[in-house]
Length: 253
Ligand code: MG
Image 1 (cartoon, rainbow, N blue to C red):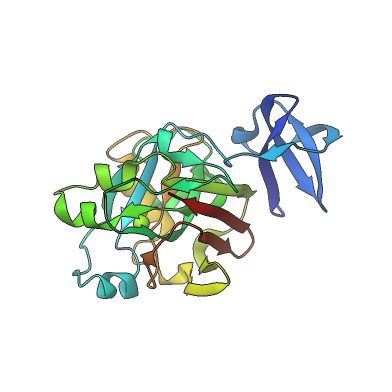
Image 2: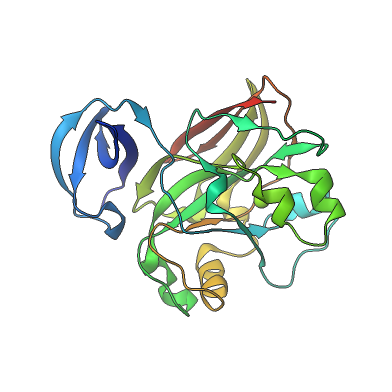
């Protein structure tokens, strides 16, 4: 099955999924999250591209690239280090990341995100990929000083606008060896490949679904490579993932 890109778009005041083909968008009939084959209807010109998904939860994995663990002076975790970002933090491509006042340093983290397509409860790694709808980009925006100060990550990772997701879901894309980059304005700051993940996507799904049921549309952020740094008002941060595209967001005060 070839890779198909589906976008959540605004059409006539409603959010709809559309299948993109050579720059044109066709509305999808029925439930896009249940996966292909897709039945498409009219070609539309979307007013806006929305966040690729509206998850019930974003589950994120910390320290999942060796080079990033090294730059944070942290030992490699013996098992996936799990935390959550609230669904209210999610924004779409082009939406502004708002830097909260008085929290100190706020960092970007370019990450590959997995979108779940089927309810997953206690799924073994060997069959975990059956529950994956596709791949998208996420910026795991982090208030770094608060992360260091608090014993857990809820505050540092949970501000409104701290989870840009998109631009599309690349349905059927193999997540195991994709180039990933993070750009501040026109400068490349992060560059790696998902082959470098310490815990693979199937291992992560097995680990998370042993704790909590993953629902269709839920998002797993798989960790960031080295090269993290801070954001300043006026910046634009872009996550680029091979086979998915670019997720770009301006940064405002
Ligand atoms: Mg992260």
